[in-house]
Length: 333
Image 1 (cartoon, rainbow, N blue to C red):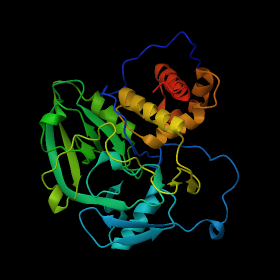
Image 2: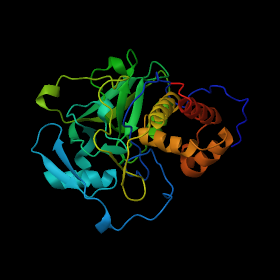
Image 3: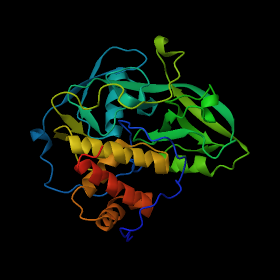
């Protein structure tokens, strides 16, 4: 899709145009997909992975967020395998695991486990709690929701915009999994598909959301968070390095992202929220990886079409991504 340098204009967003805020740890899905990147597909390039016997043995500590003994898990390369290992450790079905946070048992979207885990991070698994059904009157086009997903077919609420339609409904909270809209099951749907369905609901009509909230510990019973705020909490990937979970191929141990990569990922993630109503840091990281060596926005567009064609990114969005990566390269933060 040729862009041309004279076409830098902001198109109407595909879904809610939320206030862009930096976030860490958005998850993506593929088929519904392994952890990491909102359907980041395509074969991984480079040398073939080493045989299992030669790969480093990485052991992580984990607890259930509402309270449990500490378990030890190892040998996973994507989110489905991670949830399976957690399920084995605590003798529960893998489908009960909604999402994971790093180094906190709270439903803190700044600590959401994304495509990378610090080698010294502690994993808290949030499992299914109370189910609820809520009727919502869509009085405005934008509901005020930002959607992410867990990498294994569950879409959930990552942010609620202050003063929005959803903000006035106390039964709906950050961390709630969206099971169905008007009786249509969303299990297995990607985050952008759920966001699009919410956008397409007619204004002036009532619709029904079937939700499941994460099981809460005693000290979290009355908590209702609006989502992560800029700069709050430590960044993910602390420790000696990170384990990067890829959509295809084995997980790899990598150095922490450079300052340029970190800022570019943050800016691209903001654009994903602004245009599409989703946050997904691994998808943003993949886009930065594809774009950092491209000479012009047309080359970036071709790379995105080849690797991430299912998203059908509009030209204006691709141009803004090109600009965000360029700004980060020269230190314009």
